[in-house]
Image (tube, rainbow, N blue to C red; front, top):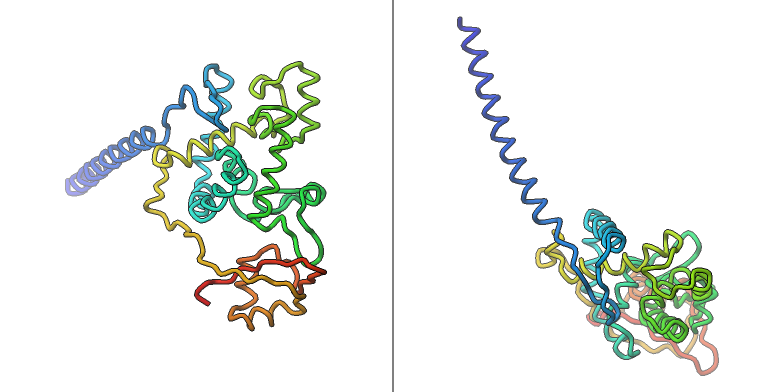
Length: 295
């Protein structure tokens, strides 16, 4: 009898605990669904152009990219943190260059706002290949790689987009060409007789490209709707720097850093375009190296 009593008591305790846990799970699940699955807008604006989300194909392609970036949580959190540091500079340059502000989201999907290197050799925030970088005025040698200079590479990306837009007269098509090249996109247009990104049948990567930009714009402009709370994050502030103009060659960057009240590590962090330990300055050229203002 005693054994039966103990068994009954344990069973009741277990049942109550399970029921309680079940309620919690149900509540959490409901809250998560309501919170992480906002409605896809009926239309949105990208590059100052209106886009109607008015058919199943456009809606599902956008939905896919929203889901991918919402649940790639660690990456998206870091993007939001870095944007707090780098967007002010990028936005300023885009405005000075007369470019649509939304171009900054192209930079996000290219590199997640970090000095990335692709398997094919593209580098930097804007993922320039060496030949294209040189075509747009960036120097690459054993000492420097200006693809890793955020300001110079951003201005170069603006020039690329201006050139592309002269051919397509459409910023969305120009953005797509950043992925597959102007010649590649023109080939799709010629073959299919269509000059509309959303109606073209493209390779998988380019087909997703503009939708990734759209998704990141939605997420970064309305992070709370997607379960991200920047106000609770350790956002990265812009770094307070001082600029030093260099018009003579540096034979040892580590020694130069110490002489200027810094160290090689900080110099490399603030100036990732300095890839060697020397800097050759020829003729009347000069370079600007950034150091911490407090140093």
